[in-house]
Length: 337
Ligand SMILES: [Zn+2]
Image (cartoon, rainbow, N blue to C red):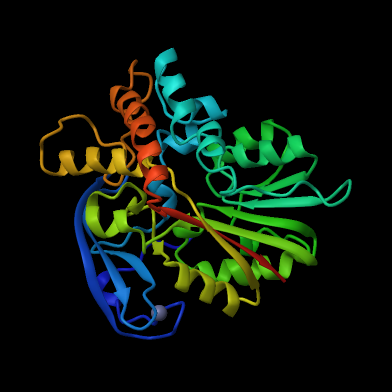
């Protein structure tokens, strides 16, 4: 797995439009477990709007950013999506950012079809501990996943999914072998998403469906909260897409984008406010969002910010619904071949 590019190589052409002109839109000092402190810049293509993360000292292997305490890789079930051992924290996790919450907030977002026939095959790129694969398996899909971080892959494998501890391009998967391929908040973690999408196009059956979801860099929250916007998650998020740049890279990889949906969950508001307070040193707790950098607290009892986030979410949501405000913090594009 290749690392994040140095600023010195910023002249590298844009992977979406091939343009060579970038402007720096964000510059953040972040300390990452396993990598240490560094300054990260988010640079934007002046032509297509695609943005990427660059750092001053090269990170040799991006797996260093995913230590054993990386929260999504600790989760073994939906109720564990926020680390913490107290029952109240687990309840908060169930109400905020979880499958249940997403189902309640906006059931259309990220919903996936059931298998078209018995034995239909689904592949999750960057499957982590296999939470999405669990849902698909329960629907009747034959489930496979690609996950380069071994500790997470082993958890997914133990739940009965076929897991490749590898990169998508080198896993040796057979051509036209999947009815459904999912990239659920994994494309933004890739240094070269175009290569992976091209491989996905090869792996998808002619009648297959491709689902790609990721943060929306055109979201109002991103423009208002800037470096504190939780879905920024620099440096783990290397590629940052707007709806236009995501549709464009999918089309250029051979896919026919058919629909785009947006998430309207409010948890990015509450977590980003927490991130902003930390940046301004008004809140002394360890970061859990954009500036988290692999230092999430595990097993420390009550996750107070998590509980507060859930309570505030429940207050904000009716307001958003009433005034038809669309936060659009994340998006999902469904494509055919
Ligand atoms: Zn571009």
